Amino acid sequence: VTLVEKTNTRKTLWRLNKQDSSSSARTGTLQTLHYTLETPAFMPVATGGSVKALTPEDLIHCGVEIIVANTYHLYLRPGHKIIERLGGLHKFMNWNRTILTDSGGFQAYSMVEFRKITENGITFRSLINGSEHILTPELAMEIQNSLGSDIAMILDECLPYPATMEETARSMELTLLWAKRCKSAHRGENQALFGIVQGGMFKNLRRECTEQMLKIGFDGYAIGGLSVGEERDLMLEIAEYTAGMLPPSSIRYLMGVGKPEEIVDCVSFGIDLFDCVIPTRNARNGSLYTWSGVIHIKNAKYSEDESPIDYQCRCYTCQNFSRAYLRHLWINHEPLSFRLNTIHNVFFYQELLAEIRKSIENNNFEEFRRNFKNTYGGEE
Ligand SMILES: [Zn+2]
Image (cartoon, rainbow, N blue to C red; front, side):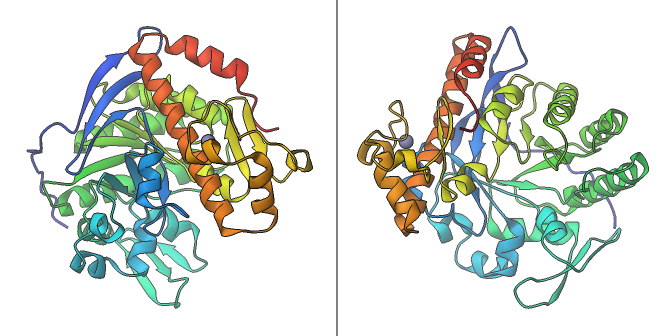
């Protein structure tokens, strides 16, 4: 593979608006082809081309401005060429705001039994029909280009936790090699490309990977390989360390994080973008977010509770339905339970990020963080 260095001619993708004076928290504006939004922002996960149970109108009601779609799922079904012929993913799913696509590496790695990783790419068998595929850096770029997402991610290798320093170093070298091949293969002036910093739980490797990624040069930088089973304190330590090495002028995306209290901490490290399946997955499990913590709607104590999930919440679900009704829907496996619960949790996450942005703009983020920690009690 010949590596051709490309000059980035795209206009600035992200710009800093306000830097907090007492932490690394900041607000910024992310400009993409389809939509412009303020950061820090949270991206709900639209695995197979939908945020489960929600319509695009629901997402807009919740204040969602950017979503993540999974390359692996859309590549296997219906296929990226079909989506391209149908006008791209935005048109296919009728979503006119920003879409970020992952590279498919994480799913190809984690969701299949038969896989092999070589320098060339990830060989795996489809869960749908057993067919064999090789996800190369070039194919990861081709798929994301066909989907027409606003932001594409490089193919990286995801290591299980724990891993030795030797394994982690070898894996990081592979990610760096793939990063160069992704940059060479990436096309489309309208699509940004983000690099991903790996290096596991080793600070020396995180430093080396950051330096090499910056040398290759991307439109933004993600921190990958965290929230893979390590202790929360270790995740926070590595996230803070890595974020601190990324240039203040670049957008920083922490992949796969997280719970509300983790997001609040990671914003203080200067993280601008988050994604996680937990608000949507928990909604379907009946775990609902409130400003004082998570409640489990199946609990018998809610069977005659006429209050909304959260009095402070202005979402469609809280404006119209009681905890008693939501418990009834959940107990009876009514499909409406998925929709109403998901609307609330997605709305809650968007409100949390909006409050964070507001507090940074008003220069009282640390106060917001302290108050949040005092009132938010985690799980009931
Ligand atoms: Zn609500």
